[in-house]
Length: 284
Ligand SMILES: [Zn+2]
Image (cartoon, rainbow, N blue to C red; front, side, top):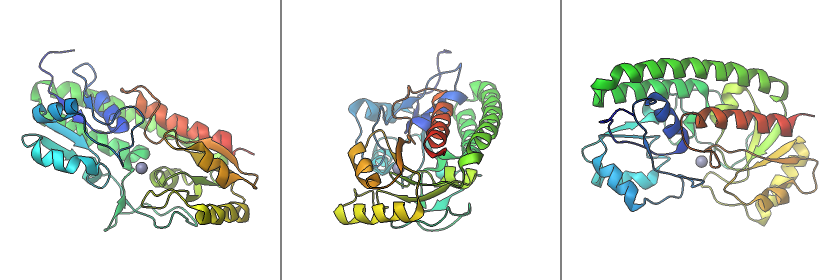
């Protein structure tokens, strides 16, 4: 590691992974939301607050996702350049869906109003995020700009390969209906043309009550949903309850890489694991 690399703070693991890829050979970014913690419900540790105070660059998805960071950014990171990846050029945004029950995936388009903030789960968005990360790093650390640009070019090519690989794997199961735990995957669904039909949690991320579980059970049978997906940090018994009385299988999707070691490879492993989980649960 070259000494003098700036303290760069990244919020969630997939974002940290792309930043780590751009900084490879120069330095390592600080990860705020560690382990299996969810950005929807998170509070800052003292060590993270210290990192924010001295960081010239903070990279996050945006206030609608990491709402825990709005106040610390205003009070602690006053001298930092803050990059909001959801607002970066070329990052496509989808509107937030209501109610947790949908007929078909949404078209990919820009829109006003509340957005679904899980923007990192599509390769084109990841490529646009990498471009924004390269530009931000080059501007706060000009001495290493060439290294950041070279890493960015390499990442861009790897993301193209990943996109191609996943498209091939997912095509055979793209039409099969399934339910997810929370509405974290619309970018993945839209990009690969998948057929998610609903989420267990509603858009306020509240866990379903008995009545909603019954409604979901009816929906699974009516649509012949093939799979119901849990997430690592949530209770699997809820997913089993929803799948009960149907032929739906259960699987696990991990949109954050909760169980993966943080670092440059995390993003690629996370995306491959999602495709693998979908293919294994949805194949006839
Ligand atoms: Zn989420």
